[in-house]
Image 1 (cartoon, one colour):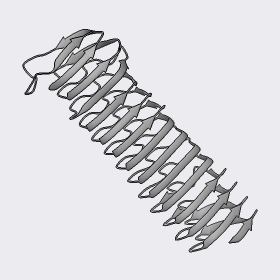
Image 2 (cartoon, rainbow, N blue to C red; image 1 turned 45 degrees about the horizontal axis):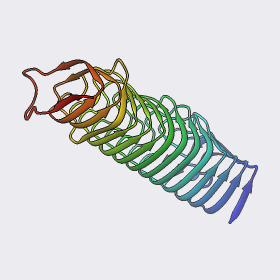
Image 3 (cartoon, rainbow, N blue to C red; image 1 turned 90 degrees about the horizontal axis):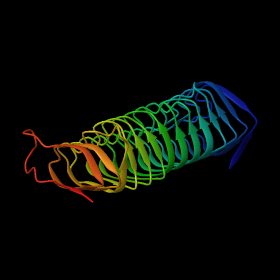
Image 4 (tube, helix red, strand yellow; image 1 turned 180 degrees about the vertical axis):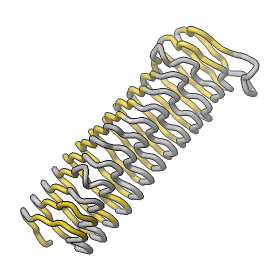
Length: 280
């Protein structure tokens, strides 16, 4: 393996089509596609300032690095990434990738990040300004994610989340097979039009949560006072600790809570319209 230590590069494709490189203390200045079409790359304590540094890469390890704002769209069309202890200031990271491990990563501008990716494993990650985070991605495992950004996890498949705080409007729209454990989800219109969404010991805030869902399960969840008109047109099996401000026209299933501020069942309820709404 070739070692490149404490050097600087710039311009277009300075390390194009290189394989089995160890980079340490390297700075990649403004330019494009510094490490395009590479494999077997290890980068330690490096700084990336130019656009598109890692495109079409296979097998790369990134440790204690910095991607500045200029390094936008840095990792696309690549496979088998292990990134740890890294700060990312650029948007639109990670597209069309397969095999991503992120540990102790900070994304300060996570807009349009992790799109159309597969086999994503995230732990101890913070993401700010993360609108459309993880859209159209699949086979996702998350632990201790702190997300601030709307429209997250839309059109995702096979998602498992633990111990996270998600401040995100319109989360989990059109998802298939998502399960969230021991987490806090804050934002309006949670989970609309999804299929097989399961929430376990979660706290939910925001108006009109969990509507238009097929196969919704809640186990020992709690609702904030602003979480009103819940479950409209959903098929649901829910156990809720505490009171739900209002429930509106669930389609079928059962809901068990300590109490309800209001239960709305009107002429617009969709068939079969047989949901059991129960009180402890």
